[in-house]
Length: 147
Image 1 (tube, rainbow, N blue to C red):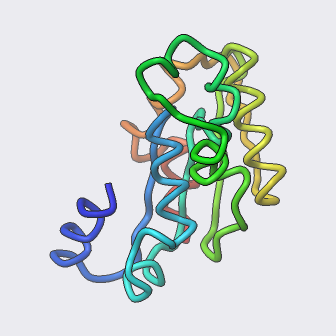
Image 2 (cartoon, rainbow, N blue to C red):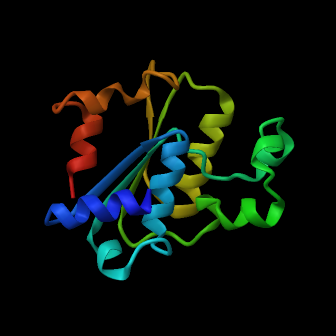
């Protein structure tokens, strides 16, 4: 993802806003921290919107998925945005009110860790919470582009 952000930044001037959903919420949060991007590029990131993010990887160690990931505690902690310093850019955490409790928890953890606004979108679940990104007049898109 860092390479993709770099390629796009090389082609477009100005501020960069990043939004990602679920595992993508984890990825854009990691981009906001800045340790994966050159300083000049990181300085252009104006807003990160983590939508239903996976912000703390430590709980995944106890799941069957970790047989594929082969992640240990050190790696989980090192790659968990909720355990990292708050980025210098604007951050918004967004989650659907009707999501599974684990996604509500993950969103809350990131919001609290980074002292970022948490938007709990009424009547939205994990698979439709991102629909706002398809509407240029939605609250989600307006928030994302308000930099």
